Image (cartoon, rainbow, N blue to C red; front, side, top):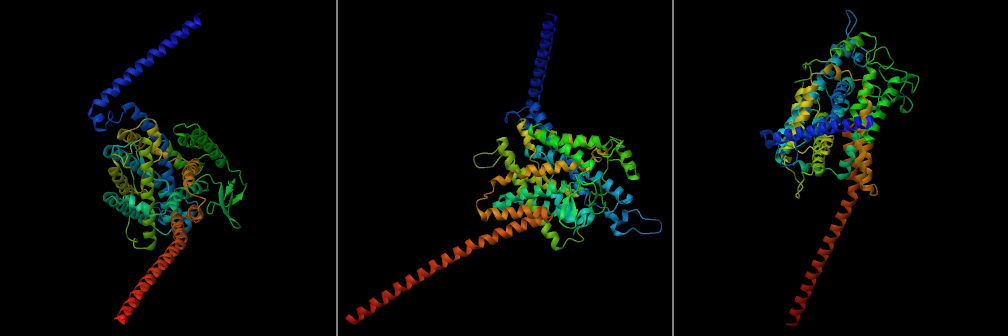
Length: 545
């Protein structure tokens, strides 16, 4: 009897609290909808309310917040502005160029500072881009430096620790010019026409190829889990070793015995299970689990080993809250070595990826949100492209790769986000992230690797739209996907796919040309016969007369 009475009291209490909360929520929503903010974002016109937009912004931020550490880690692999001059050297000696590829306290300290710069630059790019998308285009879309272009900049253009064909400064100049070109294209309305110039199978395969490329990066020792590494016989093999060569990454013993690899795999499974159950922020939970375990000192998986560099990282980490001022990456672009063939290839590749990725993502998000009208356009479309291109220009000035609209925005749209207020809330969350740089820069590579692999998984979905029964489409698409990870170059995949598509199209072109020539020959013969017949008839009439 007493238990039943207590149960009814609890139910009654919860019911009263729920009614009270709903009443407060309705009052808040009514007040915001009728305010200048609500009218500006057209909350009532789009059948939305403040609490829906708040939930949507929170959901989108949770699903895309991984980019803060992932992007900074990827671009920091290029070495940024660090050089041989930053390496530690014995007294009265100069450092050798290979110091950038070996454990070196001075160079690693420079990399640590660069990563802090890149974390802030990533957050600022995402914050400003998302805010502008909400205020100007009034769309519920989150923006941040894109996955794909960042890997292309770090590993193809600049190379690991500056081993590529371009310097970090020149690569940023390429991003700036690409952003300006994309801005001009968007302003002139040429975006869709440019996108249609690329064969459809190659367009579809690009997303999958970039996904494979990113996943491959996430499996390597320096950038991720460390599952694969170099092999003198087969070029590549399974590693995850207990000990590896710090320079080459080759296995020195104990394959599949790396503690950090197995910890990263647990994080990968957490992410997979979360996505299977459609839990918001699953990518974050996987990264968070691995990172928290790695922060414990004195373990085999710690990110803070008992070394001078480990102590330096740990001392900065203990600050927890700190506002880091960008020191080296902002305004680092340089046009001194710009007029080179590698620069123009990079420019064309980045522009192509940006045009296609932004076009596809924006239309997909607009369709999910029900914004597309009968003519295939949607409100705020023109300004959305302007914002995206302008954000890329701003990102290059801060020192990061091109900004893109994130597919993770669909999480917020599914939560009810219909206006730019969602994007503004996303921007506010990114702003708050600025004050936790010590934590964000202390995320280990084996926590980032699983998320890169998962990004690759999600980018593979487009292969279902390729017509694999038609070899003219299947072969270029396959070559595009294959070359990107195997040649470690997104540009090579695009060039290979387009080249093969042109080669396979030559047969049809030649056949059409032959048919046209044959048709023209028959027309000429027919005209000649008619002329001959007319001439013969005239001569006969003359003879009769």
